[in-house]
Image (cartoon, rainbow, N blue to C red; front, side):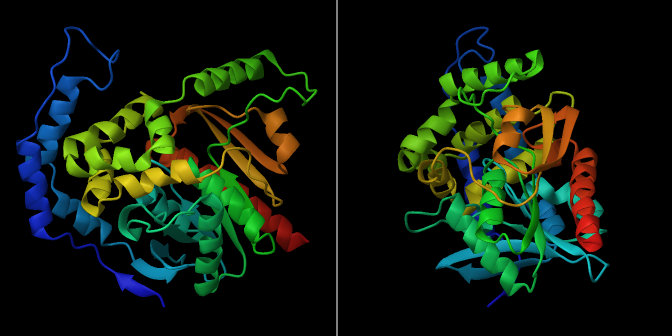
Length: 365
């Protein structure tokens, strides 16, 4: 059963948040630390003070409630999603999936332009946000993809596309494998292409440089990812108990994974952080790093790739083409890991171009 959902955080939870922020026990910092030791103290104090005294959750909550929210239970798990129908009754449906440390909020700025041509389904991953914590093992990208297939079936969509970045990319590719007869194509804005010594491909100097970046990332995995993969429950304790801890954990990723020329507004980032805090989903969201197996996700349907210059890694096309049926490839000079938030116009246009192109070809066939 699908039920309407309205965001209504109890005032007591907001009062508790303000009280905890006011009573933060701050660590010291060495002189001229910069980013050498982690998130700078002065910047974090600035964000925490704004969260406590200037940020207005109720204003953002009211704006979010202008979207049509729903919940349903799938495979024993609550699933929250936004469902926006296009004015075009026969429009193709798209399911848009966020990653970590993002949320459905990533897509707020692309709802209007994309809904002109597509019905949009924007779920919260189980264990994240208003989908709430998971309560058993095994909610990996494959299981989430199967839940999305069931969600789209319940909504009555026989044909649809899938889009995602970060974990959302893996979930979208897995959805193409789980329901290839229904998924017309998958568009991703994050597609790791690790070195493949057996590929037998002569790569360009630029592609070799991208592989060097991948090798560096593999050798120096961000501590947050490593800790969440190894001990998500341990990580969950301080993040669920301290709003400043949760803020630092997420804000550091936004600082490192975005294009400095396309900064994300502090209020938008704080709404994302608040979503993790107010739903107490730090530990359950971290479990996705633990439960999801590494390696390429097979996908038999057409794939479109958007590569943004400041992403964690940049895909190497010849290696991607060994695994996937690449029908569309775009390179952008601006934008990073949260492309739908950083450069929404470019992101939306690339998604539109890929799926409308597939839809036209399907119609001609």
